[in-house]
Image 1 (tube, rainbow, N blue to C red):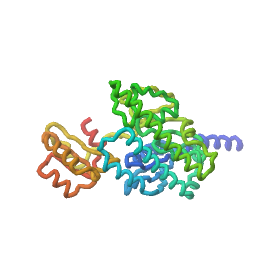
Image 2: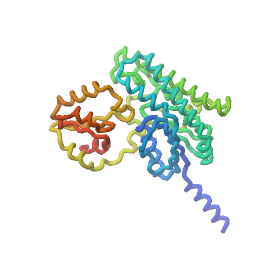
Image 3: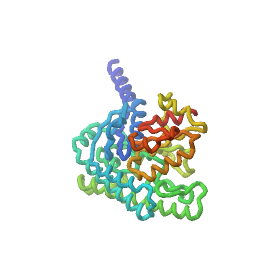
Image 4: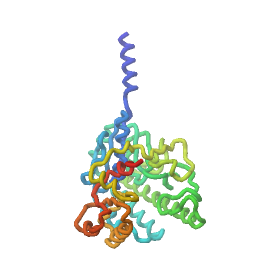
Length: 363
């Protein structure tokens, strides 16, 4: 009887044991860091043992990301932040395909160097190895986490796309991508009724994307092989063996395209019910005869880095529509910005805005 009770208890313990999951979060922007944190927290709330490795490629300052899961933070060099500032200064310049490809390759080079910096943290790598994770989840823009999953001997690889499926993901995973009607995510302006020229351009951008991310994978593979031997596998081969593909997009608004049975759309998974907003937002949202417009450049573009004539042109455009009220998110509400909007009571400046709550206020 005692033996049977022990066996039953052991079986119940196995059933109650949760998966240990490593979420690799390459903080290439604040929004990427927050998205990965939301996913990790959602898994942790559902009973999984989740650790987030937050590779601070770009400085996050005081941003609070993970709330429920356990976080290990690694701070690396600031070369990525310097590169992003350089890109921001020329963000609205017209660039050709060749110049854009060069910029993207430089971006992948910086990400590979950041990966090399991560591998210098041998104490963190050993701490992660001792966790004996069952599953790895990581994004598609950097292959560093994919190599890390192999290094830590994590058997199950889950590839997370921070947007619609990209060209290099479709290529590696053998998911058909008919470029005649499925846009390449980067560099293509093709809509749902493309012209022949747009389709040709989409094909070129598709090839550019394939080459850029192939180059980036080779650079990351090189970093791992320099440290762990030439027998270390190509990170592309590791990603190709992904058990699941999570796509942070809504399949009902995405372009129609072929997918596989293990492709799961998770767009909007972290959105909760909108909460009431506090003043001054609650007051602003009741103004404007014809409506409210929320302006935010996101976390990749710093409005402080944009050319002043560009900012002034935006404000002049807003001034032409006094029947609308504009809530404009800026990095800091400085005296310079206040002077720009002086005499325009329908333009409201703010450093922070509860965007989800504002957008859901009248739904």
